Figure 1: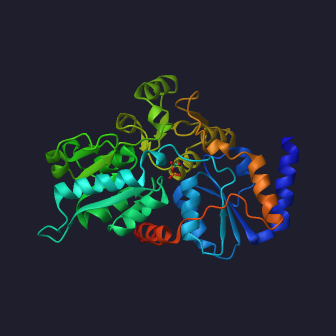
Figure 2: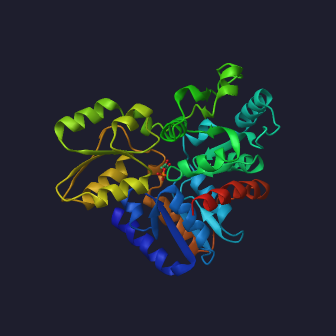
Figure 3: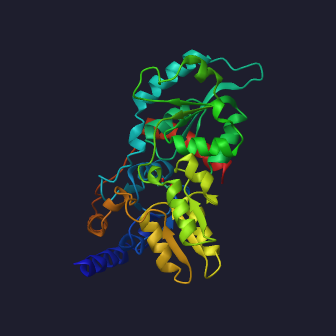
Length: 357
Ligand code: 13P
């Protein structure tokens, strides 16, 4: 039963003591969150993994690319476990390393590889944390960098001090929303469609672009609409609407605030009692925030169709199984990144941690 599982997790945690660190992303279900040493957004969790060389084992309750990042940033003798190997990310899967290399060859064929007269590189690859370790390594090898939703703007500013153009992988919405906020007009944006050998646009538009957006998206955040925001404003006059930057541009423009999951949590904590906040992000997080703030009206813009199904795959039964394994001296579901890939991925991750400590 749920109670038995809960007791088993508490018992295993007790036996492991401070040899194990359990990390939980904000989108995890409540039955997991209660066992996490740290709960955070993907940037905070990467930092946590990098900052704890003292623990033997990290159990990452999140999705695959986050556990890979934890393995890259932790020491070689620390182990990282993903309790359920099926917890992937459909957005991260929208860019494979072969597709990215093909795109890069084509774009550098169009724009050249020699720095311009000001010494700027022609293109800098920037990948969202939601990507494979191989793509982070690609960015590390080509003068590029990683970003998360909490530091995309600082990372893009860093990139434009070094290069004329950015190839932004794999979330078109985070790339577009951040570029627009920086004053880059839509005419200076181009899209790369990985399903098309030529990317789907003509050479001149890639050459003229300041940012080339990979055609990927988050299936949870892409579903939010302006109509939902209008409905919320009609139902709760004065409501504050906060959304995640993986939402489409029109939704971000219609909202009052945009930011990472940590930003959304902060916005709800600082809202005055009695106020209403409508949120455009994953439902598990929104429901938990609503329960934690009974003096405020906190609700999801779309209460029906926005759970992150892969985050939800970390069921307490898998956490109990992973911890029991560690108690018995067996590391199950270990995530290990190939050392060469890890080396180059660490380069691009370290650049991010330096740009945005
Ligand atoms: P943040 O944790 O950076 O807000 O991103 C959410 C997300 O995309 C998790 O997959």
